[in-house]
Length: 621
Image (cartoon, one colour):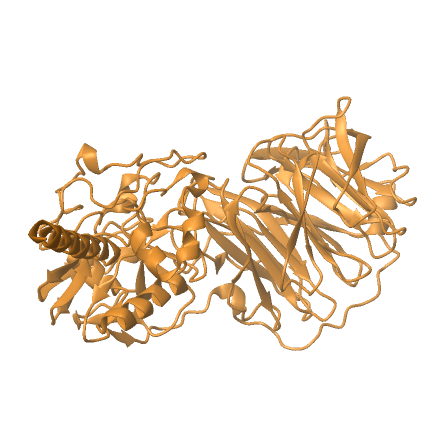
């Protein structure tokens, strides 16, 4: 009897011990962070200019921070269905690995659940609390000194194909406060909106009072080590989620104070005339104007890099033209920005470049612009995760006032994946469907994916089809079929042409009669207001325009885009200098095109703006 009673007691104690141990695993272990004052930021400048100015910050009250990032096991107590994300793309399958594929709102929801479960006040850390806790009294690049030890590195370089690594949250050495994983593993959501730092000393700051992007800190796996520094800051759209962002929590009885920041408008959104332009009718007289540059270096301190490429263009109801492109030092670089410039009605030259769109520390490859029938301008862009431009989400904004203001960006296709490298030249079909082409992958023969919107850009669908040729141009034929031409994916040594009878879900392809185009070249396929289809492409003589009056069955002999002047012009990007004479036109360039209601065709390459009309194309010179 006594033996039986002792056994029961043992089982009861063991059960209590096991339950306590499991509960400890499920609840984040918290570390006390004492108050103090530190110098926040760095004076590195360049691509890290947003870390300036270095300023004094006082954290006046004790708070507690989770020892590690929130783990799968901890998060799944709140959201059991998230277990289905374990191991996605080869990452974070274990109980004690950092939870990933969580948005800012997901992180907030976990904090609210944890607060309700414990009766304590949990939230995300402010950016200042995060850096203060990370530094833990140190002033070096990392809390370990000027470098990170080998056991804290998790493939710290940009990869086109992410290398799977463990995301276990306890690894390497903790910082002096006892926190793990503050340098790398996964980026961590912070409470703050992203914005400029204040210049004066501040106490318990909570960042700007509003914004578009939420701060992330700490860097991640498969990321260069410079992004793991104590002062390094990034940001992301609040709804974004991928395998390089997680979070940790703080427990505190106060909420950091927000502050207002100055709203600086870029040049491309200033001096915009209201109202609608009085477009004239298309002229029957030939028009050719000398090409002029639309890529003009900024004068307002906007970042401007050595490589300016992949333009898009549209016309505005007020008579202006709006052009955008990316500027970067490396096409896989996270410094990449999307710049914009405006050609105001009646102007003789384009404005200097200014900022158009940038998610901090994210690659921004691929942009398009489209003016809808009601004058709304759609902007579609790729946005990277924490690395190469192979993994992009598709983001959409709109403007109702000629590009003066824009809606908040939305994640139209949120998965960071292939098939999302946006290409200039979306079209509106006769039934109102918008078709947006994207490169289906980063390779020259990866083809083009087709994306549809039936609600003026509010929602989008990938048809799942891939047509031959990247950088494809597309038109709707009069019988409702779609026709597309693309670069690469040779068919019998010729450029591929593809047709769809079902809005892009299925396609048939064959060899066209046109030569292949290659590196540094992108075509335009466009139906002109006057009716014919225009193909702007490249031959061995350079930029050549072909016309079809029978829905692509036959094409004109082609006309070089040149006035025969013999002048030497700087083409920018991959083009370089070239001579435009009677037998030669620009040899390379990424085309984008719009035709204004007065019939003038505005074709831009990587740097130059060409202006001509259909009568000029039909003229002998």
